[in-house]
Image (cartoon, rainbow, N blue to C red; front, side, top):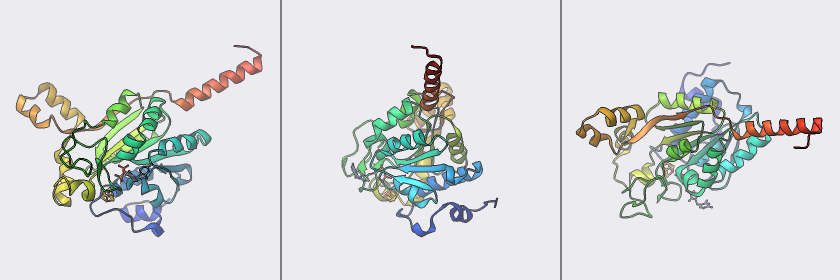
Length: 291
Ligand SMILES: Cc1ncc(C[n+]2csc(CCOP(=O)(O)OP(=O)(O)O)c2C)c(N)n1
Ligand code: SF4
């Protein structure tokens, strides 16, 4: 096996060069989510013939098209439903979903909720740029209060959807959130999510300079990327400050977005339970037992 050391080598191994250039604008965070995912797959040494990528519609949902592997570019919000079918029919495949915040928490919200509740063995990688990017920047369910969008010209008045909080509450086996501005922890976390049996959610906070940063006056690309460092805090640091910090310290972090691993458990998933049920019924059939 050739050892991959640089991003160029990584791209050569995993991407479809014929699909270049990508549709992504300068400074967009989506490509970085792809890089982190590919580094994680490379480090795991996965056979790409055993991986299928599924996506819905949106800028982030274009990702499977760039990867030299089987992929399904489905309809808006429905990637998880298609992915569930792929996994049910081919349990040996690793099924990875790329989705946007609009795709996953808006139009596909119900699919997300029930796949997490059933702990279906899928890895969902959600690129959260706070807007419906591809269609020009409408406010999405994850948009921060006060953020400006084409549909919220005076600032968003809705409470944002905490996708990690929901996945955790529903008992998904692995739940993590990272900004794309941090390289190492996210790659480690993607590896953990990919390997985990049951439902995994990796939420990536990613800049969309075109439809979000510009409208919210977050500055040039460099400043916009720094926003993600300045406005996020590790879960452990947040809890430490909230428990032991003084009032000023608490005030400084209270609106920051928490990042890190929110849940890492080993709960039995839908397919494992289904398999057990089938075996039990088969046994009853063999022994002639009625109930
Ligand atoms: C059923 C349906 N409704 C609306 C659209 C229009 N549409 C295409 S992409 C998109 C926005 C996607 O936003 P998001 O999922 O946040 O991804 P991003 O583009 O920000 O990566 C919308 C609303 C569509 N294609 N299909
Ligand atoms: S519109 Fe936003 S999300 Fe879409 S490619 Fe451009 S920067 Fe990225």
